[in-house]
Length: 151
Image (cartoon, rainbow, N blue to C red; front, side, top):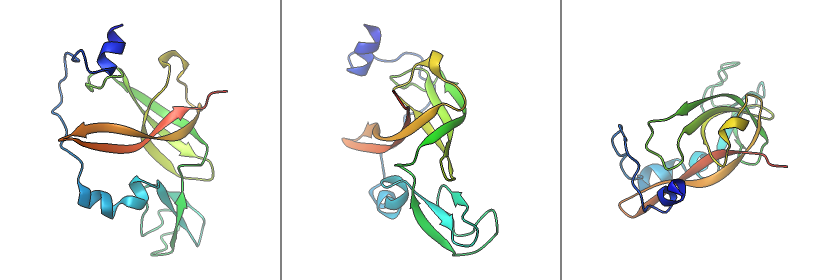
């Protein structure tokens, strides 16, 4: 019942040790729409290496300005490694931060949601889900989170 009250905002989470983050920036969101909203990485035209966030220079073959956008949000992924944060102050404690590898290339650090702690494992299949991260000043901030693939 305590978890229900926390999710509904009827009970405060005690022991938060981090400062509250500021609100989302509209200008930054506009500049980063492809990366933030569409979850694009970059794929090198020379060697095919995929990286996230998008870069101008390929870390594999060092080709400059030879990148194409590649959408990662609809690609299957697996957990490379993960960590659990018990002092994050989020409603869903612990906050699970996972490094995920996308099928076909690309690696991303992501928050994990809709997970059971005892089911977490490296190599676990995940998919991306666009979720609300936080609200500040009446403005909602959304980003991609990874969720376990359910059968």
